[in-house]
Length: 92
Image (cartoon, rainbow, N blue to C red):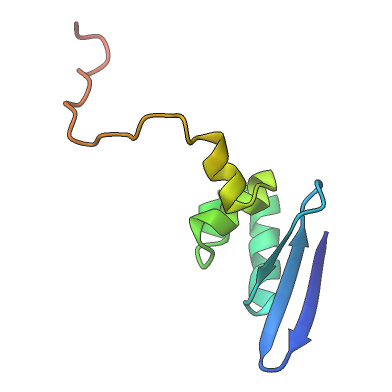
């Protein structure tokens, strides 16, 4: 569910996930609504909502708060970018 509020000089968009969790976004309502429209039309979430942080976009996709998302993956090893890239497909 999405609710829009105006508070002082800020627009607030409150998004409630299917699990009842809420995240508050401080952006113009029209900008958020355009992102929803683009997303529903097939745009990738990062293209539809470039003005949101990755955590905010993840909440829109999964309904997980940042702490919950981190808890899911806390036992995985950190990705080390210093590793050699894998060989091209088809090469041993």
